[in-house]
Image (cartoon, rainbow, N blue to C red; front, side, top):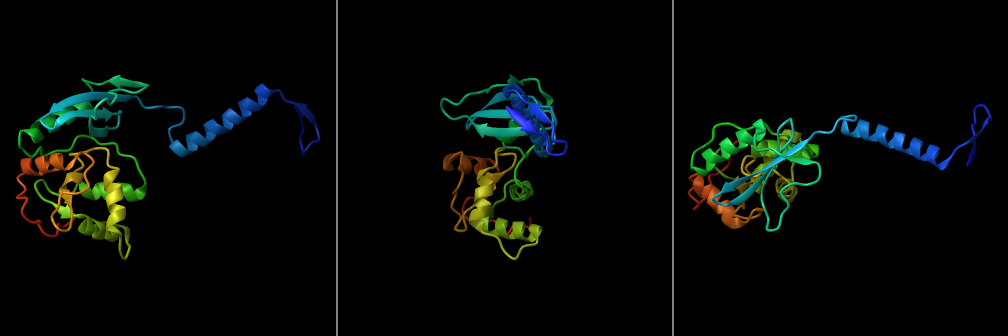
Length: 215
């Protein structure tokens, strides 16, 4: 393929391989800017935790916990490029947290977390972490708190519910503590039975709302 350089009018002959090289170089540059990691790629470590509510899949990188979800039937434990992380410090701390939690105790600490998402979702997840152990709030109240943090006049509870649903670190980032305005246990990806179990473990009375939580 021939190409004329506009500034100097020099005619250049490029092969298909030359063109592919230029395109790949451009893509690498774009990915470096967007991801902010250059050529570095974090290793993902995974593990499994046996709980009274079922098998829990754990994943982390060197910065912190990236996932804590109940394993669905037939779900794959590890994907391409992931390593078994039984002895990884982050997963060890997470297992210690889970041991305390499922024994009916408030863990009293949060293992290192590495959550990624849009600024809106990150704000919602940040507020989820402030809901006290054994307490609940509603999607409406959480929406008001998010709006206040973001300097907005109002916020849709449905939008907040969508962000809550994208939380990948269940239990520790306690989306199970958000319930319907009428006290119903609604909107939990892990299943309503599990949501009820977690709240029962935390001593929630289940009969009425705790009122407005100061987030």
